[in-house]
Image 1 (cartoon, rainbow, N blue to C red):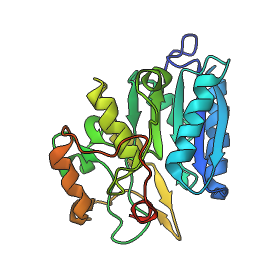
Image 2: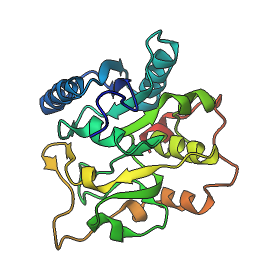
Image 3: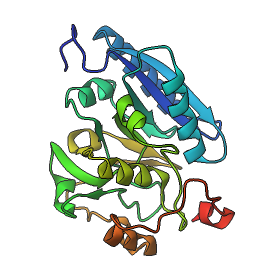
Length: 241
């Protein structure tokens, strides 16, 4: 737990992009986390945005944070279908990283995990501690506000092939010199809720990732041009990608 008298992030926005509905357990988790954070003298401010497209909601939340007169030093992104422990914010703050979060599994079979570790090793799925990542999903991640000040908008957008908006953010942040960290201790405690609760892999269970997705080939060209222009319209079919 960070020093309560001098927290790394004295004021944190909890950013929740959604289509307008939340899972009830997500709301309970956010309330519990806000209470525990306040007890450690870390202030939080809920900031939501509703709409059909997640990337638009995320960008609107970032703009609200940057325009706020409050000294918001970071955004903890929480998707509206996540479950997590009440010390999540304090735990992530304790790492003192610019970008740090958890990975988790998809809500549909075969329940693959999202993101990619920098060394491309699935072995980290069974380890604890921090590991560098090339890409992390955006549903449970803490980002310093300064990162958004340094990166040009839009911070989140789909590529021309419909690649994830949160992956785009990680790529651009890494190009700007930031490191992305995955907390595997927190990962084991995060649940992604669809029709059922999808937790992390159990002992003896095979770790499956999205390597069978043809768009995964973009990993071979992370540092090359050819990504969609920020002002370019994204087709409906790409959004559905």
